[in-house]
Length: 121
Image (cartoon, rainbow, N blue to C red; front, side, top):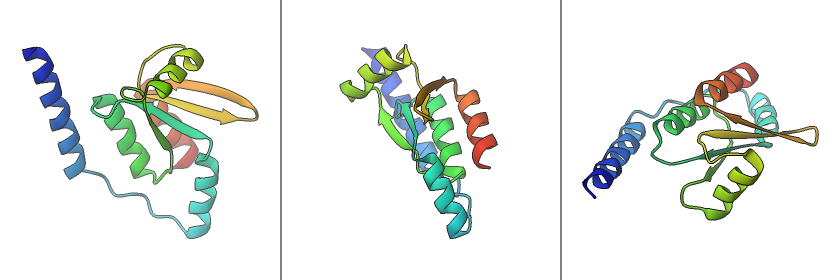
């Protein structure tokens, strides 16, 4: 019980620190941002709100000004089950990429951030 309270407290601290140190979104021309919005429409991030690796990934998403749909795999049982059955594991963060009729599941925050940087920076 003490361990759970400590974990919840640390999670709330991580969320608070992320909130007060949130990066500024990248500025683009309206046309460039529209193209980015269209390219990012097929991306979604399965995440836990207080996971440090998910926070790191969300910060990169914000910095790159990407409208990626966030899916709560901790509290939403449907999203959790989708992550398990289609992605193969309940492991976050996980980026779901839908392109050319195929779905790719990308795990590991470093890989996700590198992919987003390469594609959108």
